[in-house]
Length: 79
Image (tube, rainbow, N blue to C red; front, side):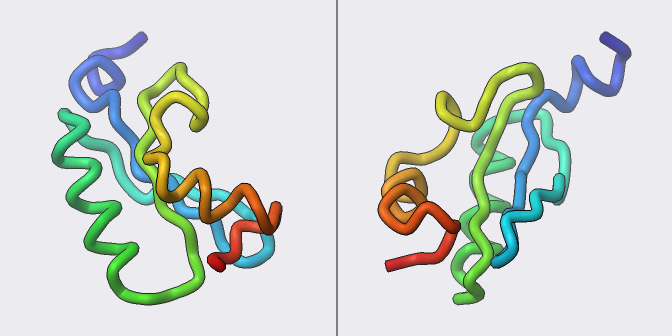
């Protein structure tokens, strides 16, 4: 693990309508990353944003409301 990974372990991930996932940014704290994800999510686009810690899967770090929004449709679209 390098120094940047240690100091910025939280990622904001974006999933588009086609299921493609992209890292939007890296942050030092979960709160900072969540604030960015919430801000992006509030824009009203169909993209899905969540916070993820390096080395952990989305299932542990994804907010419950976003997990439910993605789960029923299976394609990342919102209900």
